[in-house]
Length: 218
Image 1 (cartoon, rainbow, N blue to C red):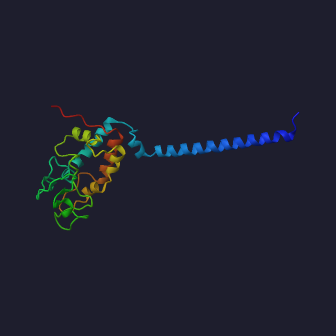
Image 2: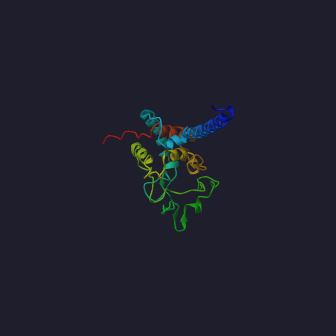
Image 3: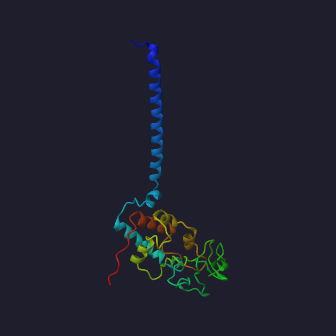
């Protein structure tokens, strides 16, 4: 017959094991909760393409996006050729600078030679930004001449959009060079939407599926 003294160690170790198991389960729950909070981040979801698809709303939002991207403030730095465009009429840049391999110009004709970190004071003087450049030669990201269908498809293709995923595309709306379009210097028209309106339409287009408008009938 077992004595009380004999069974106490068994109860002690049983209680200790339950305590250890409870602590382990608590840690697992805390880690799982941490992962859930990361998954709840809308940018994280967008990067994994867990988005709320709605083709009608997405295409409607892109109509607003397209108006901005085809305005001179955007299109002038996304030309079909290797010479940037200039002015509200998007004519070839007067001094005919070339794109160059990395998009910053060639030889002594570098973008940063005239485009300083901030806008130069005065009417029609060079606008400024620390990152002023065209897209690089191996990823030209042309806007000029693109239909809404073509441009939307291009923007959603990592092999044509600078290798950006959905999260990076969303964040790109707040890039300093994008923002420069709404601070172009004296004598230049602004894009047809405010930056806040553009960003809202941009994010709606992407998070609703990034759908391309139907191509125009031939």
